[in-house]
Length: 264
Image 1: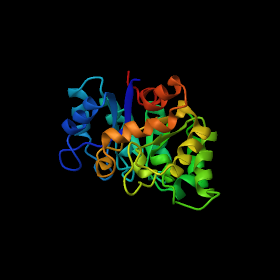
Image 2: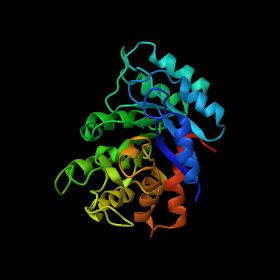
Image 3: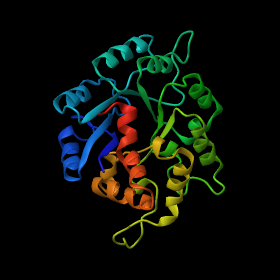
Image 4: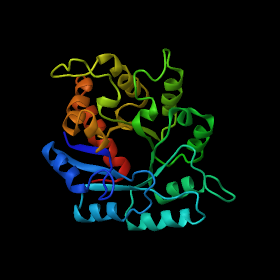
């Protein structure tokens, strides 16, 4: 299985530099990764340097300050430099006459959106209207659309159902991450699977809604290092999909991310 990590953060000033990520990727047989700019950092130069210095290994998802009038032009410049996507929030709006200008520009440029937000924002009708307005724009919901913890709400999980109902739009995808943010850890820690399995129903619901063609694994490195660690974020996330076909796992753990973010 050729693995592509769809969600990593690197920086010499916050989190970890790219060399640390490359160590974990090489140690765990991860061929490629998507570098997702962390919130508040609008200087994307380091990510472009990482992609340039490691040809074929990284795609760069940039961040722009959409509140600024020149944000659309800035996104054009970043796309020309090789950006594969842009990170937006569900409620991101542009100033001026067209509040969806930044979304439309991303669609026009052939980029993908890695979408970060809370469950309420994803579930809101306003976000569904955004998705409907840009049908050719791949929009990837990070962290299972923020309904990624077993204790987020009581059954029948109405908020989770609204978020997963976004699968009715063919341009919406979803990221799932290490089980440390999905399941409760066993105590004492059990081996070789140190998580309570009741939380795994979230993954099955996501699979039922989106299917392998619109699901992608991402480690969430380096925050994952404070949970189960990079290796376990990959190894243990594969285990719940053990009964799926090899073709499905290939898509969820690499193929879908490579296709959406233009990695070959």
